[in-house]
Image (cartoon, rainbow, N blue to C red; front, side, top):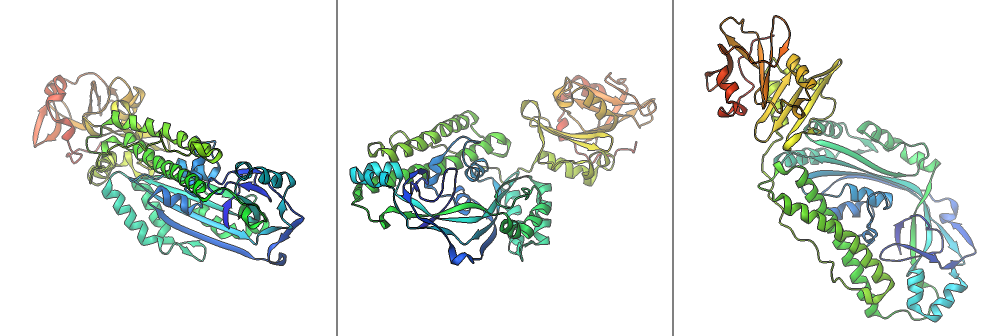
Length: 517
């Protein structure tokens, strides 16, 4: 016997394919339903939290068999638990934490179970046709209760940050389940991790009428506290126990050799689907963050992604064909996709994160405009800019206050204050000015008071007049000097404006001696 997740159409006496766990036709008549333990059975309660590092471990922890993965369907068409495992398929570059809780009541089972007249006649006529119609198991018990599975996904910047995050989570996770509550140190670790990585939460829950799926740690904490009682009050039928037909009076079935071929083929299809989902997840991550890897061959990786995407439904179809007809139990034409994945950089660091920390520590003028209080979402949830760049806007009570902008050819720079407001009106990095080449700097020279400011962009500049408070895109007088503090040498403004690419502008640091506005 084995316990499976109930899906649509499953009920007492329904036939089930033992490998793919698909519901088949109704095979059993019965006299009634009996409550387990004389109707007085208690609840079986489990809860767990663990770091998941493989697709197989994710599916096993969610009680999804590898063979059942032959149900592979596009996102939105698969059952809820398999969709969760598929949408958050495990890649090697992120960290996954699975929260699970299950409340199972004593099972109800059939009394007087027997084959229906139609099923008995089908078996007498052709045991193999019977198996194709009814499967090789039937649902003998039904468990009410409820469960939920929540996946926290942390997308890190490089192997160093992934290793550091895993260490901190490992240290806290041991104290997580203390009386069904969330340990404070673990909660603090999660909150700190959200600042250093992109975090997503996805949940599948059954049972507990009125319960909301948790979207943050506080809601998760409350759900753990109340889930047992909620499921006791509002249970649903969510698991079933399978029993083989051979426990009923049955004539001889298919040969051992035929069953072995079918079993091996379907299991291998399921295994290849799980491996394909994991490979596709790895490819997706590399294609979204190619800058984190050493010389990725983008076109080859894209082609491999397309091949995997096409292979998965073929494997699912082949498993179904094999289940229905032994002559289709072959793996020909379903070979796994092979591709060499590029090596991830050891300590790339996210350029926006590095720049932001440098500003907060060393640039007292820019720091208030990009303060942590103005960071409405984690810095890791940045926006993609043109030509492979990225940016993050900071928003205060009265609207945007500043922004960090990065391009692989120019580096990361900060724009803030009045210059930023004008830059924003012009479409920031997506507008005609393009990405910034420098941080904001002080204009110094004859006939100026040393308080005017300038930012230089790919296709122009914006400078702020301290006395008038106005921002202009016109070229300042050539006699002005801009204090760029580049290797302790002042750079003439006309040289920067005529040929900004001549100077390694992107190497400027934020520690310039800037006068307060």
